[in-house]
Length: 198
Ligand SMILES: [Zn+2]
Image (cartoon, rainbow, N blue to C red; front, side):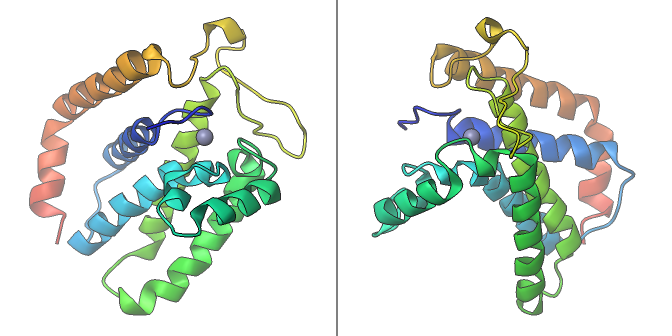
């Protein structure tokens, strides 16, 4: 997948699901419906790639017949890649929109806890901004204040996106982290799957 301006969608999906796992397993166990769990995972993955809808080449647009055109319009509207959708302001706007969309959709999915789905979406979006913060370009977290923040603060130590370090460093590191994390939390995970998914 060609992606010149950010980490790949694959990395963002894995980061989103990783973040969701961390939050779920660090919270007190709560009982949720299977429908809630499934919808929450999808919302989380969508949240994980949502900030990149400001790229005309974003997967979301590319798969639509008029995608190129809409991508371009959206691109101009949000100020190009890594602008509005990559900021706390953008997070708030999308959070607000997702809130109302879920309220609108609730009648057709009544067994779904839309509050938890909303959190899963937001965790996905936030994980995207955190991951992009690790790249050379940084993230304009504080828009409209036009400064790009990155970690570590010294640019040379950050990740160049799309390069080998992302493919062979970041992605496997996330996989290894997940393996260790789920191993460490194995009993809690089993408890959730056996007794708290209804
Ligand atoms: Zn991005």
